[in-house]
Image (cartoon, rainbow, N blue to C red; front, side, top):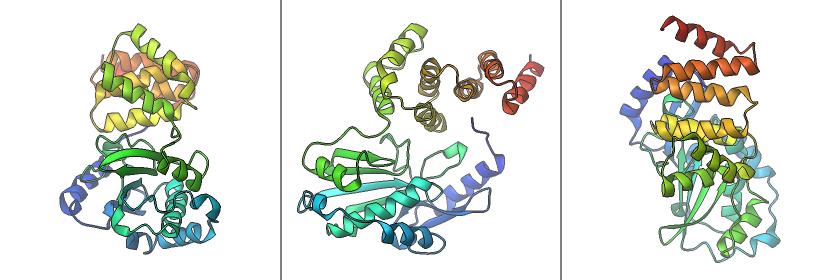
Length: 297
C-alpha cells in the first residue's frame, strides 16, 4: 500500500521540467534527503553524501579473481545499463561492488550507462527522461548487458550466486534466470497473450507463475510500477493475480483496492478495502478508505 503525496507530486513536476536533460542531477525527497536522479556518472557517486556508502562497499568487497578469469576479454563489445536508486539499500551495496568487478575486468566508463530512479508514488521507479521505459525495471539495482544492441542477460537486485559467477555465466552464453521470475513470466504473458480481465483466465495465469513468486512483494512492486506508468489494466491484473496467490496477505488486497480506486471503480475499491479489514481489522488506511468511499455513495 502506498499513499500519494501532493507535495511530492508538485516537487516532481518542477524537477522534471527544470533538470531532466542534465547529468548528475539531484532532488530532495519529502523527508529532506538528497538523492541522485536521471543519467549520472560515477563522479556523482563519489561526491557527498553518497561517497560514504559507495567507498565503504567498494573497498570491502572481496573479488573472486579465479571466477573473474572466465569473463576476461569478453566485455570489450558489451554495453551495460545500471538502474539504481540512492534511496535503496540494495543499490547502495550492490552498485559499488559491481563497479569494483568492472574495474578489475578493465571495463571502460563509456561502456556503462548509469540511471537513477525516483522513489515517489506518481513516478515510481522512473527517471525524468524515462530511460527505464520498456525494460521491465521493477527492482533496483538492475544491471542489463547488451551485445550488438541486443540484451544478453541481466542481474536483478542481487546476483543469483555472485557478480563474478553470474557475469561469467552470462558472458559465456549460459545466463541464469534472474531473481523475481514471476515478474518476467507475467510480463511475457501480457505481451504475447494480452491482458485478461476474466477471473478464470487470471486464475490460470496465477497457476502458471506462482512457483516463481517468492513472496508477495515481487508482483506487488511490479504492480505499482505499472500503476505509476498509467498501465491500469496491467496493474489491476497483476494485483488480482497476486491476491489469488497470496490471498491471506492484507497488503495485496489493499494494493488491488488502490488500483481500482485510481481507475474510478469505487464499488470494487470498497469491496477490497473491506477484505483488508477482514484480514487485518486494525489496518488504518483501509478503515479510512472504507469511510471515505461509503460517504461517496
